Image 1 (cartoon, rainbow, N blue to C red):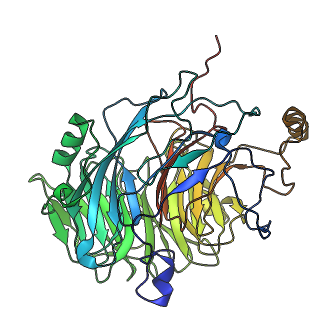
Image 2: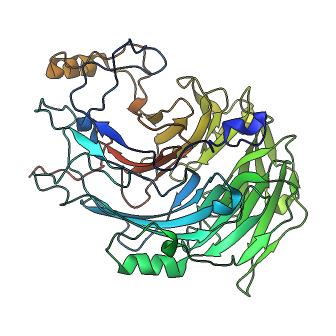
Length: 472
């Protein structure tokens, strides 16, 4: 497990000891050498520094209490956006010190600046930049014409939420409709259209005080689960169809009704022997979804075939915390485990017994989030309790000639480790106790992550098609 604190087993899940106001950091430039997490040790007096040339854009923000879960809200600003400054919308659920202090934050971040970076960075003068606790800019005012002027602008509206938010998800087809899993054991459906409309019409940073809290009742509150849970997913194919899974190994199916509410099947899907940790709908089959569990297994379900799994497999030697179904290559399912490993399965090989096509043991602590890129079918991002967010390109193989050429261009600026997997594309650090990440579906190359000390918005410079070429 990777998310809670009510008992020793769940203490890995969320960090309620994190204090409000954390999240400030600095980004000095020109690191002396590449530091390999989990391998290299910091000597006394040494410190890690971020190389801003590794990012097209890097910003940090927080909305008060730490958020265990968030989701990016699809907007109407364009399906594929490549020009800075960017704007994004999110919903996030807090983990406050007291249950009554929790809320769902609906927020907008605008004027997200950045600039295009070359794959091989050039030496530049020191230009330190601070990451502000509300927003930050690693590429202030982009003098080359890419970016914007001034720092990003955060606008936030809060809706009180009974208990901590274990997970929150926005519906793909109607993104103003959100589902939240509470640590009280309830799953709730919300309509945040009024808040999103206000944010869309305003460009002014909002006050984060009590005047920004708006009491609102959920559209539906379901108490049929026997325990709290973390697994929650909207169908990408059928608007309003939802599945929710709990720590008592039960999965409930939600179907939208013509009256604008939901019918929740009281008879759960049962197939795991322990907590259901994550759920993912198939991107191509409207009745098919996958689940993963503390029992170490992954199950594939077909809602038309009854309440038992259509297929089940032992996936890891420890808890399976998270799964992600590739929407661009629907035969591929990724899973992350409590032992730090993550695997890729080709579901077409299930009949042959061994469907694993890739297995990685890079991370040494529990995997907390995993997600395929919505723009590149071979690329996925992974976060871990080791405070690393890594990006992987499974199409990459070791190329000795290319590496030699790169080293020559860099003129020994980088002392790169020899034993890194060739598929490892990027390592992002600087956040404490990473919990969840998401790719932005409308801004290629942009990732958002949440941790005990707030959110990061990042765009690594070495991800292909992040920005259009400026060559003539």
